[in-house]
Amino acid sequence: MTKRMFIMIGAFVLLVAVLGTVKFLEVKAAIAKYASFGPPPAAVTSSIAKAQTWQPVLTVVGSMRAVNGVLVSTDLAGIVSQISFESGSEVKKGDLLVKLDTRQEEAELHSAQARRELARINLARERDLITQKAVAQSDFDSAQSEFSQADAAVEDSQALIARKTIVAPFDGLVGIRQVDLGQYLNVGSTIAPLQSLDPIYVEFSVPQQDMDRVATGKKLHIRADGVEGKEFDGIVTAIDSRVDEATRNLTVQGTVRNPDHLLRPGMYVNVDVLLPEQQGVVAIPSTAIEYAPYGDSVFIIQDGPVGADGKPAGKIVVQQFVKLGATRGDQVAVLSGVHPGDEVVTSGVFKLRSHAPVMVNNSVQPDENPNPNPPDT
Image (tube, rainbow, N blue to C red):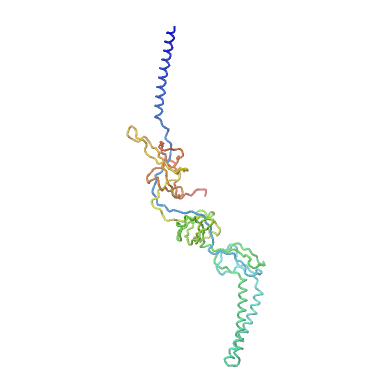
């Protein structure tokens, strides 16, 4: 009985061992079969890195300022008797703007002119008499002094009238007038702003580290909100002699032609300072860059492993760390890590890893415009 039991137990153990071995071999074969399968290739777009000639640009925000700009005001108090300009009109140097009431001054002028005329006649008479030695030299000197005083009184009255006649000190555009006919004005009362608009200054600041990149004679391109589709050209004409201690910025002044008076003092503008051209810049789309705290990188497309037929089985990507330079529109310059002719991934970089298989489909590609013009701007 015991012997029979041991035989049955042995047979059962043998059966379990056989079944376990068969199942182990089946699982091992399945693992080996599926291990040969990899993830499907990721669909990406690509671009060939090219060597280009770039015009580096230093872009800053500036403010417009008139070459000549004043608030025209009164020198003396008085009542406005004449207004000879319209708000927003152009005037020339010397054009009459406002005249104050000068009736009292004109009356004093007439009186002074009469006294001067009498003094002139007396002086002429004394001159004739002195030649005949009929009067003393002191009488002639007294007559000459009286004439000089009378002439000075006339000039004083004329100057007083001129100070109440406000004229344009330079060519420019008059703003909105601040006075009305018959209004009494105190000394220093504002009449209207007057701005010279062509040419016009643009002033902007550059960081201390960019001082060596900006110099007089550099070309400028000016763009302003509200003046869409138009760019103004200018040049750097002056650089401040000191750096601001609070901001460590250097103030730069440029001169811009403004024949249509589209640029106005006080406007904020975008200023592009054109720097010397760079030759052989390797440029790629900015979408190809994978930005990371430990370093920026791109994925370069290469041929995959060689198959049994001796040909590459497909395309793979290799991650390459890069050093970036300046940007221009949708492009970025690569200082190191990419060479001309390298094919880089331009979209889908976030889902890639090094040596992953890819499938290139360039039917739709991201923008690569060096001078983009978005439709909503």
